[in-house]
View (cartoon, helix red, strand yellow):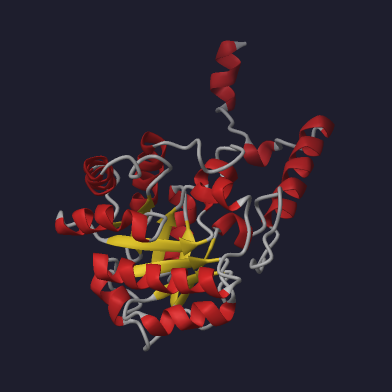
Amino acid sequence: MSGEKITVPDIMAAKGKRKLTMLTAYDYPTALLADKGGIDMLLVGDSLAMVVLGMEDTLSVGMDEMIHHTRAVKRGTSRGLVIGDMPFMSYQASIEQAVINAGRFLKEGRAQAVKLEGGARVCPQIKAMVESGIPVQGHIGLTPQSAAQFGGFKVQGKNAGAAKTLIEDAKLLEQAGCFSIVLEAIPAPIATMITEAVLIPTIGIGAGSACDGQVLVMHDLIGLFDRFVPKFVKQYAKVSDIILQAVKAYKNDVETGRFPTMEQSFTIDTKELEKIK
């Protein structure tokens, strides 16, 4: 399947057969690299607010910004499934609002699916989206848009009651029509139970290795976000250091006259130059 376009049925069929990969992408160049790297799903996450736009949290980013970046990601993607992350208050207020905004991701952003946070409380919205022909990825556990309710970014499902609720939520999301579910910051044994309880793929982020796939924020993966590194992140590069070194070298070369040289300059025919003089 290396060169074939990934579809929602492909993602669903992968459960139990192969591990799925998902990364966030927010622009054309990173989408291009993720896609060339063979990543199955590219999530235009609302983490855009923090890692690209410099906002304090994910709550401030809106639909117009998300669609703008989704279009860019789509242009850089030929194989992976592009998923638009529905921002805060784009789906919570009403079923009608949810369907309209989800539709915008597909129609304007050219995404192939949307993701939204929550369990039982968002099942009516999910069902309506799916009935409208919009593929939906669920998201339970630590749901950043609801972090204020949780008292911050904390692991979820650490007691029996909370764990049972998560398992039930996963089943309800499946029944509502989700094609996969992101499990964030959930104890590995509970994530294993959820993965075994549903027939659709689970995509873990801080949820252990038993999930059907894994997702990370691109900027965490490559070391390009400097505020903090979550416990569940493995940094495969430290790109920020490389970029900083390049910027400092450029600055020094300009100040000392080493850049530009004739190699980076254009010339004019000597006879034409004499005419000007």
